[in-house]
Image (tube, rainbow, N blue to C red; front, side, top):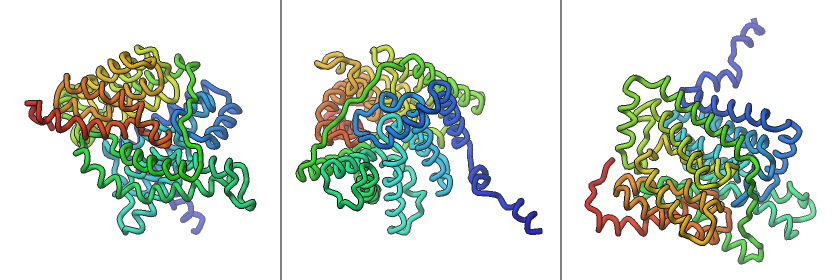
Length: 440
């Protein structure tokens, strides 16, 4: 009898599988594509060595994990971080929404250029600790726990500077583990304070900045860099960047795009294009949840945006690598929560124009990041129209170069930080001069 009872008792994996809803299954399909690509494009030994290099890296901007650990390790590392986040959402009882989809795509994308399990878990634990202290369900801050990993490099950087400066006691001065103890404690603290800051900052930009977490992360990173530099630590951006893998990774991105386009078409009704037309009528201002409003057609919007982001990257002569894939994934993720063709394209035109006119090559990381990540201010174009969108994009690309110096590369959502200033600066001007009525 006991043996029979044991067989009938679902194990933890089965319990998780039973909780999987549509979007989680779609994301699981994406994980399978990325892992399959990893082992097709790279050797298991290289993947193992690359994963070690990724976990032990500083991870601040710009650390292209494809350059650091190879294509296979970058893809596997991303899936590990994404799977950890999705399992956390499922165990926490988080109902999949456009916000959940966005958070998972964002954490996957930035796991190509700065997030890894070692520096992400402490941040997420800090958010959970905050929810426990405040006696609130974790699912209320679950999406925030994914977004706040934008500041994950602070864990890696603190680990490196504490080791390099010999500030640890001999007992814990192992070349990597000792620093990670300090970095982990800092990461938990950052995660703990992130949620209340995010709630407050949403009121500052009125929902016109999709990357609210990036604005909060920029503020935290700025304070952290100031303190660390004041203590004598050298904190500064990096440039680990490759152009060697453009062809295979571009093919992969188009496969991902096709997967989501097909998923959107197959799982949507006959009125899918009518619902797509409605999606493009929205300004995209937070929180405009396309998945909750229009269902699975959100996948179609995401797939089309994936193709758009990949094509624009190639057209301006930039490589497809960990950095640009992170940008494309960011565009796609918000295809479930605010971004559409009508509000994204004006921003891309403005940022591309600004990139061509500044003194740096268009394919420079900061310029191509602005072209892709700059779409976080897409609701401005959605409300005020094409011309204002182009102007905002132009302003944004030039501001990005400056604010990156302030936070020392610790904030992965640097464009979210810059975008916050663009919104605060431009909204009063556009409101005074524009006759456009708000479209919601």
